[in-house]
Amino acid sequence: MRRWLLTCLVLGCGLLLNLVPEMRTIRETQAAQRPAPQARTARSGDDDPSPQLPALSFAKLVSGKSKIVDLTWGINEKSAFWPGDGYAPFELHTIATLAEDGVLSKTFSSPEHLGTHIDAPNHFEPQQLSVDQIPPEQLFAPGVMIDVAPAVSMDPDYRLSVDDIHRFEKISGRIPDGAAVLVYTGWSRYWGNATRYANADAMGKMHFPGFSAEAIEFLVRQRDIRGVGLDTMSVDYGLSRDFAVHHALGKAGRWGLENLARLKNLPASGFYLIVAPMKIETGSGAPARVFAVVP
Ligand SMILES: [Zn+2]
Image (cartoon, rainbow, N blue to C red; front, top):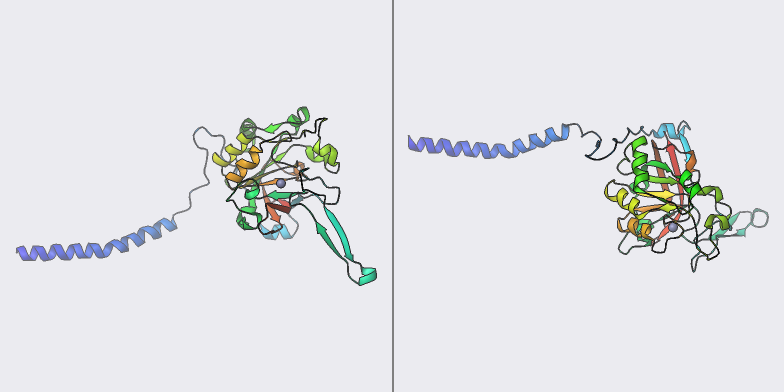
């Protein structure tokens, strides 16, 4: 009797042990079949949930039914660039003409950071990705556009604050995960006039708006952004000496877009951003073609 009981016990345990992997597989299958959790809503103390992003249809895009906004400036030898040592204007030379050579061909030279361009995370920080190393999926993002032009019209040294972001989210909803945060300062109206765009005073100090380092810290830590952009020549405002915004972005492995065009033509949210920089190996940045798609 005792022996019989023992046999039963051993057999039962064996059966149970055999079943365990089986049960795990079932559990995993059920988990996989469970619907994905809904888009994250407000965390405690946070503002409104992100509004539902309209679906992006490639068929609609290529048929011209979606609005495409080209956020890129054309570049030429007069285009504004950072007035630092070693920086030089864009240059374009014709090396062959249709009349003489049967083919039109040109050569150009340019700083990486001229015209509409991307700052790679390695621009101000060591051990960060160069422009060619930014994964492609990081260059596609849902976009939001924060308009601070009224504040800038009163103060050219204006910097986007955390309060501006909270105000924006109260009206337009939470900044979605993986977003590109674009700031319209109104400074793009001076593009084409490099002197006015730099807006240097008698002491040579430049006055144009930018982000605050606190706003970047908030966007990187409290939100999960892919990158930022604006319509001035630097994500740091003109008076900056420490380039705190560039450092904060680079440390977090995020990119910045500078000298964006036509931000005013964008809605506050509900659009997608496509950033296509030249793939300069080891580059600290590169001229980029930047499109917004409003589905
Ligand atoms: Zn730059």
